[in-house]
Image 1 (spheres, rainbow, N blue to C red):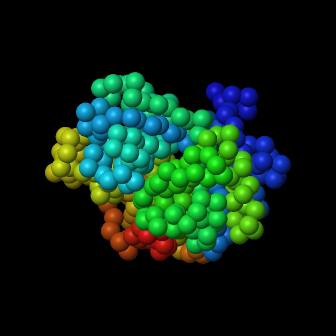
Image 2: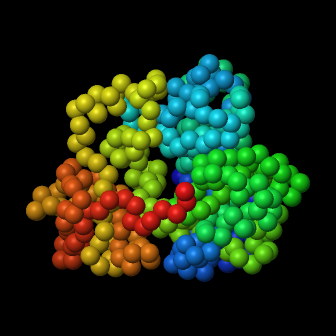
Image 3: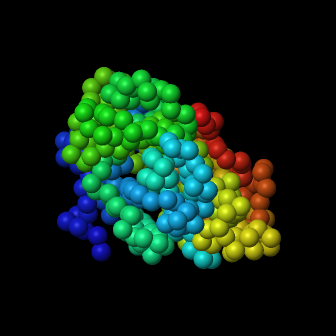
Length: 362
């Protein structure tokens, strides 16, 4: 059982507390949920630039040939032929095709790979890698040793280039580079979880506060908490591990087949091939409320009086001015009108295609 004493703190914890952030447990860490308010932080990210403390995420470096060591087989994406500097989003699966975690793999060198995984699953991911790699000694678990700051928003290039140099402006979407920031080694990746232009910066834990404060110093960037981050990712239809994707669901059911390369071998491939042939029983759908009320996690979803699924994530969307959500439904198509919830005040929602708002990161 987690208590405040057992929860881990990021290198920015004291800064968050001093800034008046509302702190709450998340993935085994005590993290900032909001500062000025979720909606205000969401809007600042969409119109300017925000900083997110993501030091809680798991980070691994593997130094080996991806095929020979077995890493390529553990990830659903083909990474062995990725050029140096390329990033790939994919999954760890079990043999049944269930999602153990979603992750980003960055190729930093010919035989050097950076893996960024979810906080709540970092320990399990480490064990999964130790078991699946042919030589576990090539794995370095840097979780907690490295800091991570996400800089997201249309002004993020200006903010990051101010401390990392003009080279970051040449990074394309899902590319990374090793640079020096404030004299310390760092990795800057043009990736994010908001749909906006953005960068993720990894640096030694001891330098995280310096980088954070320098990014804030020019006055454009503001801190944002995990509450705003959750709304931003939901507007893009990005899944959250543990809610929208998990071991009970496959990438096919989550509508994420494009991140699975069936041309190569990977753990869970045979199960996914069988499912692709037979068809899925349910798929992740996006729900747009007819009002400002939002679907809530766990609520049942009905069509013509029959239950067809349940909500996995939901929130009010400032960008749409309405409630939005996602959930696994047994049958649906774009435009289907469903009822969410039971009792005296059910919610009407329409199934729509993801994303809820236009993606501007590319």
